[in-house]
Image (tube, rainbow, N blue to C red; front, side):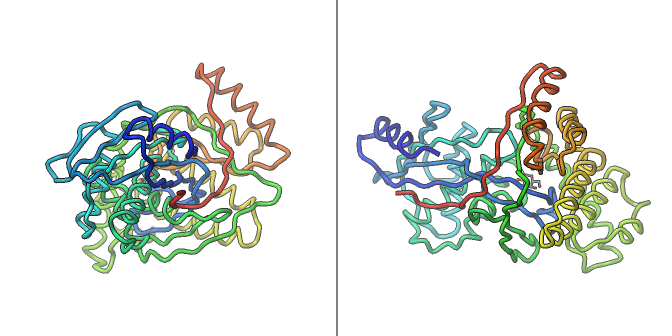
Length: 384
Ligand code: GLA
C-alpha cells in the first residue's frame, strides 16, 4: 500500500493540491466459509494488502474518481439515478448512497485510489475499496458518527444494492475491524466478536493463488444463499424459532430431507458442519493444537468441493499437492470458484511445498500460481 504513489497521482490528476488519505485491507479467513449469511461463525483477519485512497471535497455535487490501476476516470452525481456504469465506480457510488441513507451529508469530492489486493483472488479487494470510502466519508462528511459495525454494513449493502452480490458481513467486518497479529472470531448472528492472537510458532500461513478469477461467480454465490434460505423455510414449518441454518442441526435437516432438493440438502449439510468446525478450530488454537486446526481445514475443503460445490479443478489440485507434501492444513479460501488456497505449513516444509506447488501446477495447467505470505494487519484507518 503505497501512499506516496497515490498522492503523486492525485496531485497530477486533479488541481495540484492534496487531500486526506485513507486505507483499508483485504482479508484472509482461517475457517468458516459461507457461514456468515447463515448466522454462523467466521474467523478472518485483515492482511497487509489493501486499498489506499486520497480524497478531497471539491465544493460541487459531483464525485470525480480516478482509478490509478485501471487508468480510468469517472464522474458521477450523488442521486440514486446517477449510478455510473463502470463496475469499479459503482462501489464508490454505492458507498456514497448508503452513507447518505444513514444521514451523512455527502458532498462532491475528488479522489484517486490504488490497491495491491489481487483482484478475483478471494481476498476481498471489493470490501477493501468499500471500507476505505465508508471510513473516509464518515470522517470527512459525517463527524465520525457512524460506528464501525455500521461502516461494515455500508459496504455489505453496497454489494447487495449496487453490485448484485448478496454477500454476508465477513469481508467488510474484517476489513474495518482488523488488528495486527490477531484473527477475529465473529458470531454473525449476534455480531459479538473476539480477537485471537495468531502467531503460530513453527508454522506459516501462505496463500497459493490459482490465478483462476472468480469474477463471474456472483450468480452462483447468490444461488448458494438461496439454497440455504430454502432449507430454513422448510425447517421453520416445524421449528418456528429457526431463523438461520445456524439454528439447525443435522436431525432437523433430516426431518425435511424429503421436502427439499438433494442439492439444497448438500448445501445445508456443509453449512451446519462448517459452523461447528469454526468452534472446533478456536478450541484447538487455545491448546496450540495445530494438527487439529489443519485437519479441519482439509475437511472444509472437502465440504466446499463436494457438498457446497464452490471449488474448481485447479483449487482441488492445489489442495491435493498440499496434502501430498504433508502440509498441515489446506483449503479453498473465500467465496470459491477460483482464487486462493490458504495453507498452514510447518516452517521446515515451506520451501519444498512452494516449489512443488509451483512446478506441478505449471506442468498441469501451463501457468504459475502466485504465492502470498500472510501478514495479519490492522483494519481501516486514516493515513494522513
Ligand atoms: C465472499 C462473501 C462473504 C462470505 C464468503 C464465503 O467473500 O463476500 O460474505 O460469504 O464469500 O465465506
